Image (cartoon, rainbow, N blue to C red; front, side, top):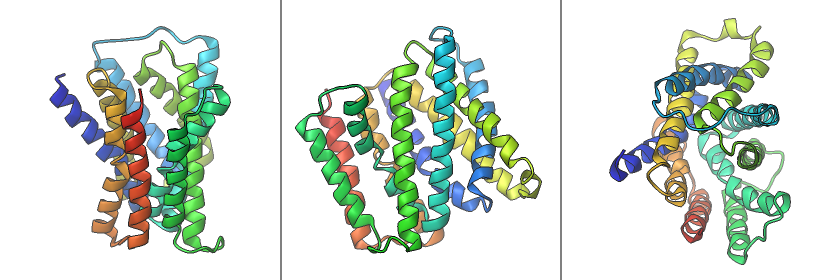
Length: 283
């Protein structure tokens, strides 16, 4: 893969991740059903990619790593449920921007859990993200549906930050695609028994949206992300993935007429700008 191909792959992956909220809204079923169905199709897609990949990198996971991957699967599934709950309650734009707070949580938790010194510019990034979330908040009334949805989205970002840090501690030496396969398999095994009785009520159209979520927004997007990181730098990938909320908001505006207010756009711009600047300044 050339650098140009890697850049195209990472942009396509960011676009697919950005479409998660769109497909989640189109699927008129519960967040639990969406997460369970997404996991099924993601497992199939990741298993196929792992089988077709000629380069099998990484060692066999130890018993400790398998346990941590299972815990990561629980965090991944919880992240999905809270994110799709936010989409259902407050719409794609607020859900996507609330979730975009996860780099701020990552900075704070990384310093706390790994006892790494947090630099001044990282605290500044956290402050800018918080300011952006304040601007994104539709109204200062915790009881409003929009604010409840935003809280679900921020919780989703917090869970994803925990997952990122857990992966840092547990997946060293492992093939990242196979590690993702283990985590998605855990989500499927945990959620399918809970959703089993409701699945017969899921319509064929909804299964189509769940298939797109699992195959494209999870399996293929993750595979493109991993493949591109073999060519381009991680901080370059982080800058491109900061565009994920932009894609999500643009498609929500186009498909569902979820027109963001100027205040929401200002808050989203601050959040995305903080992520981009932080990634650019990373060494």
